[in-house]
Length: 195
Image (cartoon, rainbow, N blue to C red; front, side):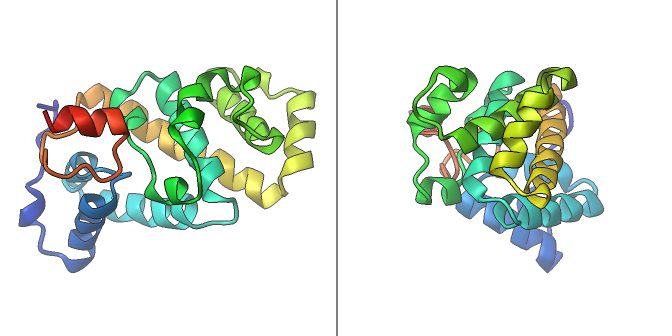
């Protein structure tokens, strides 16, 4: 169990907050466990989900690029909970496990477009060392993205990285609250929950 207790998702009566929990059960990413931690502070649950909807699921930058950055950050941080999730929107748009498997070695992979590689270079710099975002990286970013898209990508990477680090310190696990739902899980994680 995590280092902070879960709020019982079924005890949440505020319709807006209960809707966030229902979405997590239906779609995952974010999963119900992380939402049940955020639910200790309704304003945290609300503001996280409003940002997640406006910036990750919607926004000016295509969702698949943001999902690749999210998984890159998760794998870079060795956050198994976060790396074990998949966005249903990105899967519907055509991302596959091949991209997720190759994301850390994106430079050498043929699975990624130059645009996706530019986004992953920014994610790498934010995760590891800002000096990695040198002039050559910024030239690539400006060649493939508008400035609003770069701002959204950078903001999203910061949001997901902070949450992922926090969740990793808590020690939450998939299935702590709902082993039946595999919504938003990577295939191997979903299979492990079913055994």
